[in-house]
Image (cartoon, rainbow, N blue to C red):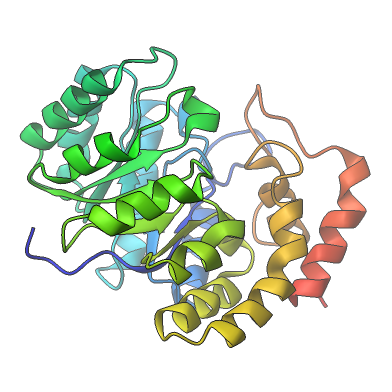
Length: 296
């Protein structure tokens, strides 16, 4: 690819729901506008943080339409299109291309647990069916299937593969990808807490959960890293670290939806089998947001 790498802080957006559990379009529009005002570099709707698994195809499309409309070309939109059925992943990619997103995010096939050569063929089918740049999403904690560094590097050579959201937590694996990646292949941290270390090793940014509630601070952390100002970045990381821990005290996006409810930006409503954050974690969550400067 000839384009510049996707870089910076991208927010893995939640999907706001009404009290009745339906898509809250007004809250979504407000959240997207606030994210842009706070300086985030790109937005990532209908991923795991966006509860894509419990959205209907029509709801997924509507979420992306709203995000693209509010963004209005100001930042890239990287839309989740993943499936463990390659045919569905291809169909979702084609549908999203019609809406105006700039990139597609494709997770490794979950549940099936294909061999590495099956993962390569999965991504080959996706890129052959779409003209948009594709970001690989490696999150073995959710999929039960790690994309090994050698496999990532093989997929990276396919046309229109633009980067990876690496959430394996394996810094040695990420370092191997960074050492051997093609010139325009982005490596983005998929773990907020590892962003500083990944970027110190040469990474390009993060697809962040915590930036739903602290967009300006997380974007500043990444910007400092990109400028080589690691002492300043470390100070921001230390301020956000309690929030980074609290954001994963239970399954994502349960804590971040509770946080956004505390900030008055979305209702604390999720779709089963996800449920609201256990009450015993609320005081820790509130304290972490206060420490981060998100709550007075």
